[in-house]
Length: 326
Image 1 (cartoon, rainbow, N blue to C red):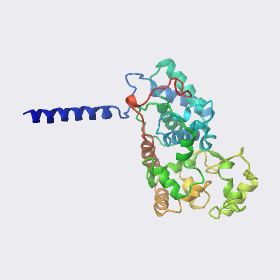
Image 2 (cartoon, rainbow, N blue to C red; image 1 turned 30 degrees about the vertical axis):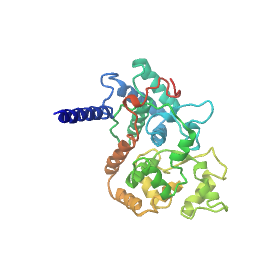
Image 3 (cartoon, one colour; image 1 turned 60 degrees about the vertical axis):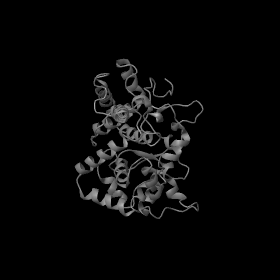
Image 4 (cartoon, rainbow, N blue to C red; image 1 turned 180 degrees about the horizontal axis):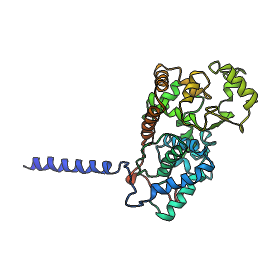
């Protein structure tokens, strides 16, 4: 009898232990009781301001991506460091934009619901809303993320895929986050909107192997145009270039068409054609409809938005997104 009681007690302890993580998971309308208007506040702010800066859609989705690839989606990319060693000080994040936009949304939410809505959830919601308001795909954003307080430049450098990545590096860095090659192709599709600085790809034009050569995988006519009209030198770090020329404001399939024409701007774009699985996925996407792409892109975004999230007591709600201990 004592043995049965011990088993029952052990089972009850196990079940109680299981309840915590289940309750702590992300969920739709997480703030329904604690801050009922939270998601509408974010949506309205984006709606009221995105028309003045439509390029923010690309900037915010990039911020979301860079945040999730370092310590999970915990808002750590937003943290400022007086010593210059936070994530936003790392090379991959020096051209990330939208920090002030997120801070402004946070200010509105703090006035309405102090200490309730996390910075991590604001990034996730705002990036989705901005893409939707510019005609892009919609996806579900379950909430309940908590913020982290650690932000290291070295971790950003190690985990965010650089534009110079080959397919092996891309596969490894995505797999580290629980994302597969299909996710890689779909999330790369976000390059259909937005711009890049010349410094992210001029090595392909002027010094690909360190001998003053050009990347042979880059279409020669496209390369010549970039050299003559966009990035006249290897050291240009100010000029911006469309990632999807002629269609950078439209979330569509043209990015994939350009990749197959060897006109993907980054080495990481070109890398997608060097693997049979990623190449097959590109061709499959192009034979389908834009709506099908939107649907698949949404699933990968939802998957990305769950990477190593902090929930419950695992994280905090920072009062100021740029301050670790606020």
